[in-house]
Length: 490
Ligand code: GLN
Image 1 (cartoon, protein in one colour):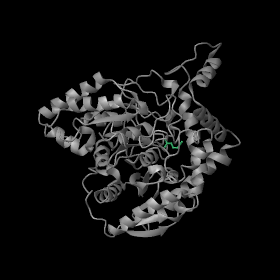
Image 2 (cartoon, protein in one colour):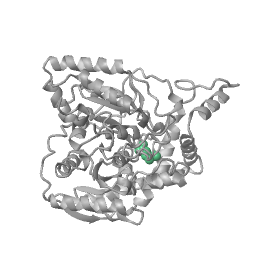
Image 3 (spheres, rainbow, N blue to C red):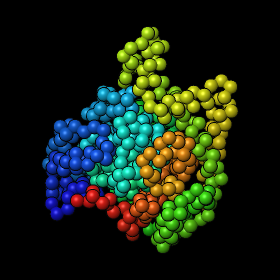
Image 4 (cartoon, helix red, strand yellow):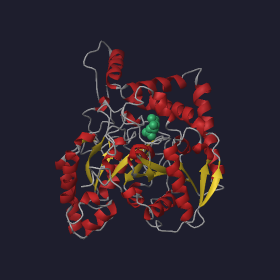
């Protein structure tokens, strides 16, 4: 092996496996050693070498039989929000410590059927609530670019693991930015598809009208391969999965961008945007112009309102979804209690973290009689208006581009006592989430402290192929996505 497996992209790795340059078992072992060596990042919550090697053996048999599926034998890892039969699932919560699902999430099952080998489960904010991974009951994840900084959240383990090349690709989930923001903070590529394109079956529910699965990898090409393997209808298991058939998202990656109209929302470039991030975004937009795209000035006037709207709706849905954790059906149960009500109370008081409790309380409040109209219903109305603004914007442009987050990754602890400061930093990812649009983050430069900056690309409904095409062309002509954090290259 001249190039080690962790220095290869997922697609190159798959090709090398097909050419039998190495076996799936060798590749799995290679990555498991790296996972072990960099355990200090706290990216993985669970590994099980025996289970992974059994999957790798099965992939090797398929390869030996001449099968050539695009993901056959490549290692991946799953955000610990996806339930898995072969590994425990915690959703980053003490509530589910030690829980093992009797079935695989649809996304997990489809990737497994495509031949991907699961290396383990990745740390995340508790029930995917957070933007820094500090809300995990199992400790924060460290950013490989600077271990004193957050990798972002809630898919922080996924982003850190890919950036550190502990695994070539991972799954994440995005409710209000949790794929795009950690991808941006860790200098990797991630895509959240249109709401409903990927099945939510087996994803531990946070806010069901927003939750969506997506891949996180080192390139748009890699993301396209993964997305193609797991999108598509799942009518018997997720009634909100759309009946649009799966596509081969890698097909149109090379198409030229001549004449592509890229909308630049002026609300994304206001005072709150840090100068270093702004400089990287401006340079990326200029690069797109060189690639043949035309920049169009657009307006998304309700951008600021997306924060209160999201934090009302997401909390409302969370309060309902999390009522299932009652100490009876699964997960933690208090050891001592006097009666049923006391058991519920103690169980939930003991096993939920502060942020989860905060959201359950907010959610219960905004749904309660007397406040429902003032908060929840009002938020739903504005959610619709935000989607309408995008509809108008997409009459003038094909894609929208801007920053993912107002700053680069901040220091661990810097915002951990201030939930509102965390919420405010979601401003650029929330509008697309509320509208259900597909969105990406691609590495586009470096800012303060040498930290990566991500460019956000938003597409119209079902615009994944176009997004991936624009991202791929950018990556063919830049090298931000190929850079590795110091200490993790070799
Ligand atoms: N940061 C947002 C939140 O805390 C988004 C999280 C997510 O997308 N899962 O809710």
